[in-house]
Image (cartoon, rainbow, N blue to C red; front, side, top):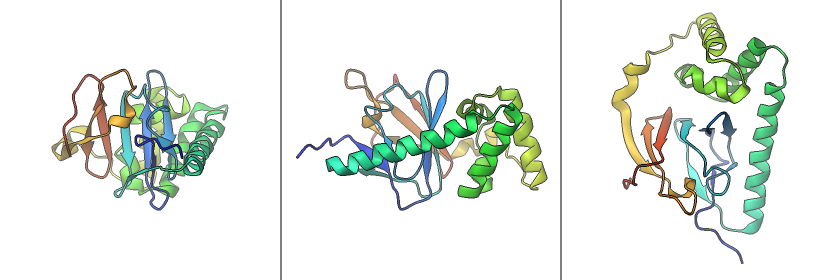
Length: 188
């Protein structure tokens, strides 16, 4: 039986997700979706959403197929939003969808620039819609430097290309983590 020890997926049992930032766009992987090699070797930044996000090892070929199918389903969901003709509508639908699935406070804390990369809008457009959306809900958006004290390091070597050095991630508690592809790994 074929087994790839580096093949992982997000736990399908939890409300968690990853925003995977690539060079010119971002992808979302939700519960049950495959993440890591070979899908995400070009990942430059990854943002975890959900207080209890978890990566699980995928062992069997059938589990790998299921994880790939779920990744494709999440990509299709995001594609439908990105195909809306009005940029402000794309931004609003994305925020509403994330708010329905995750804690709106966690989504409000996400950088608008990253959210803009998900649906192909200018960062200024997402920032305006982001501010209007959360002001309307009465949610105060925290300043970016206010939460910088919550960084810790975790390792995910499977997000590196086989011929490159491993990717290091710095995780902000319950909200997101970032990676530096030039860095070495630090154990959890």
